[in-house]
Length: 315
Image 1: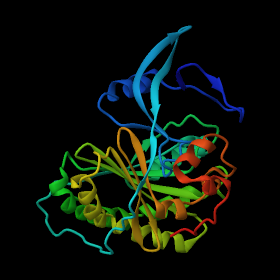
Image 2: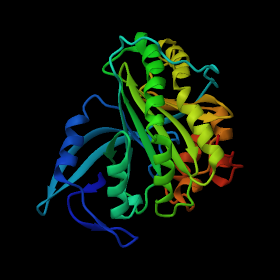
Image 3: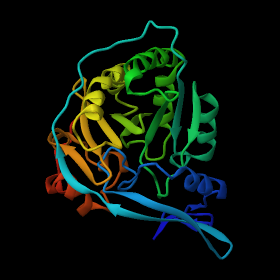
């Protein structure tokens, strides 16, 4: 099947024209072997994946390259609820290697001049993302480079992140996020902060939502990021436990704590009852109703979530 990304210039339903650079598609294919690549609905990474890519290649067509892939659906399963301990820790060990920290965003959520300005004024390194959508959801990804650390050293590295984040915060990271999100197209939409890192070949993503006009949500945002170190305990239990080997694990912040939302094996997506009850509505981030994947999401989240659910406030 054709995934969608192509080097050919295409016109989106919004009227915008776009094409993917050949180097980007070639890099995607080269990096694929051994990776767990989830299939999500409308780029809403906080929702449980509905499938995974099993094979990927490039096909030549009329002088252009198309990214092609095969995939398989993931079975639906339920995971026990799990809450990270309510702790905030920061390392005092200066011998740990320095973490790398970067923030990623989709520039098409902004006017071209604003996207350039955001890149130039960011207090940490910027990685531009490319999503195949008319107007992608507003997701800001903070990627932690752990330098190949394993599960045994994860707690100390996550404590180190609290220190590094504190320095970035002092240099204006949250202020930059707030002012940047206000410049987005359809800025009334809710934003998602995604903190991402990989440990023992397991990718971990932790989500919290915020709105640029809600000062309280930024207090929650700061608290959630400072408590990333608390994820070490549930991750150790999950990865070292008797579960089927996890490939992708997601947490969501709510009421001052990190909650396990779902995790994926090669065969299934395991969603907690807590997340089915408390997950925010897709409309908050899309600025419109969900257009695709409704039945697939209902398979993993239940029909009530797709048909309408009371949406919890940010934080």
